[in-house]
Image 1: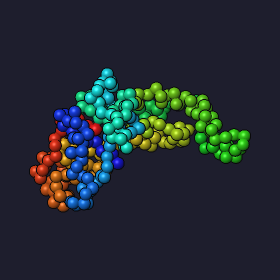
Image 2: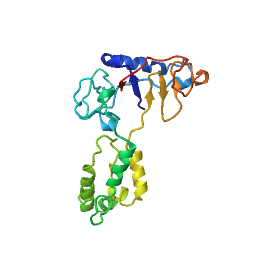
Image 3: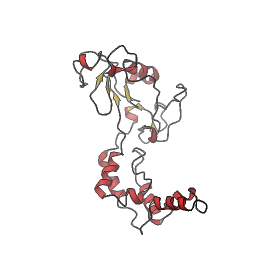
Image 4: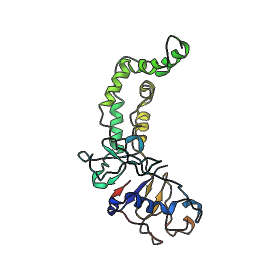
Length: 249
């Protein structure tokens, strides 16, 4: 699993230490209720669209304050970010403008592209490779499928859409003949909207751990059963973790 950790702006020079401090109440140690035994190891990741990263505001892609991913086996080694993405950084450098509303518009536009003669689905080429395994090999399957006029037209249509700020699954089709051409328009749009933005687990500034849309777990309490504000992250009177203003990782 992954979680977005909020840190104070003053933590810019000690990100790894600050994350360790924020995560400490949720380490598996068996000293409190089982709900707080969440992790046994962690490392920073997210420097790209496929790894759950953050969008960087245009013009700030090379800002040294942007956080880079670490190797899981060598946490001190920083990996390069994909251009336009980062593993975290000051909020003023991050682009949070991507939205479900815009994703819905882009999906609707994508669903109207490629109005050319019908195409065969990928399965047709796969079945041919199975039947003619000596004369027609599996390496030709995807190439022959994607070179069809309809598929080529649709691929070009989708590539032209401004979808760089969205999750890699958004408008990414294995077989557009089936995924688009044989899916009801409303269903297609809703499926794409659902895959447009990554759902993030969050560790808040007040030490609340939110995961999979469930109720919050407060790290300063012995467990949910004794937490006076269990599930609510507002001004917890039973304790707080180090605060945050502007950093996310």
